[in-house]
Length: 98
Image (cartoon, rainbow, N blue to C red; front, side, top):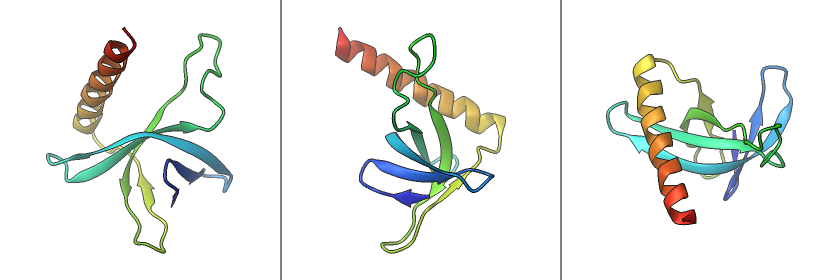
């Protein structure tokens, strides 16, 4: 994972690079990890429902000259916590649009 200000480059299991925009990041004291929500650049309204597919990963930030590392979400408890954060984010976005 390479960091820009609002972009990261994600490398998939086949070695393909995908430029992604960071939606937001947060830290969890309960799990002692940082998390990032992101989506591929240009995919803002890609599917037939006008929905953007958002990805989430745990991450280890890199030092100034080093790349960070994306990690898979490992437990059901983590997914539950992430879902709560996502639902809160979406509710706040909807309030801001009203």
